[in-house]
Length: 179
Image (cartoon, rainbow, N blue to C red):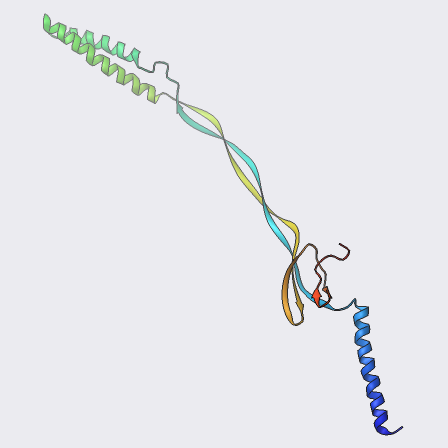
């Protein structure tokens, strides 16, 4: 065998061995794959309502029994009439009595109204409000970032794919094996 034939045979053997090694590696590693750069579980915020109550002291007007202030009007009219009757004589006294009764009735009505408005009581009332507790829960989905053919891609998956994604017919397979 001459020297050129020997070099050609050795070079051919090295080439065949290299191709076989690459093919063997692909068969052993399950074929081509894409490198997973990150797989982050997608979370969502869930708000749960709950009731929060506390007692609060409030001041309010007591219920009024005499809403038209009749008692104050009558007492004021009687007192005003008696005072008016003390003034003057004859028909002047009669006019003073009527005027005193009218003025006393008006004044008595207003005095009773003011007293009723100021007649308050303190009571304890329960005040409630709805508040929301928030927490993050997993959605069962993953945002997967991977590199395939020197380009980065992102896909949403229903499982964590691990370190590599399989490639079939030149496309990345994102579905779970067997499902």
